[in-house]
Length: 234
Image: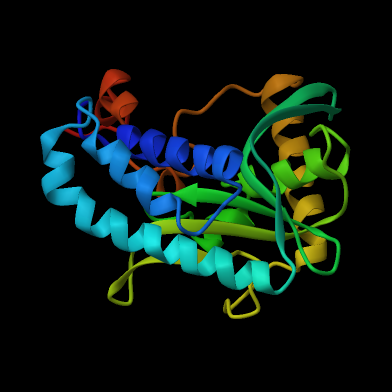
């Protein structure tokens, strides 16, 4: 497979999914699964040479972080599960990477990232609704076997930060300069989604390719739609 960011993300998600479903998140099994993925003949040789050291450091971090959380009573409820609810006049569908039961009985929605997570500013502005909407689906019973109030919203990034690979980032963390209140996060995401539906799905507002460019990084479709020409750039 080509060593693209999309391929890396898919490969890591598959490793983590199998670790949870087949190994019950046993600490001694994740490194083994990651090494097997890298050794697979379908893995690009460049991945083994360049990505393996940083990936394995991040994998070891996930094992340590998961073990520490398990000691507090936190447990995994489900991984890679689809769900849906009726909301704002449309069918809202979502698939979570992982949802945990926290020691206080509430839910934590976890999204794995091989790169940098969205900024807190983008989340607050309503341009990164994923965690909040997954929490909404969970609270409304849209995921089979999962119920409760969502209060934890976490990006588990395998990227580098402060000299090491692997860290947790949360838009509701008290450590943030301007954190979003955890008990308001779902309603804020739902409100932003409702407004978007009224504008662009059930309403008559025309779609804009890059409504707020600073929250929409460059992607392959930018060239396909000749973005720079529309922006008046040479």
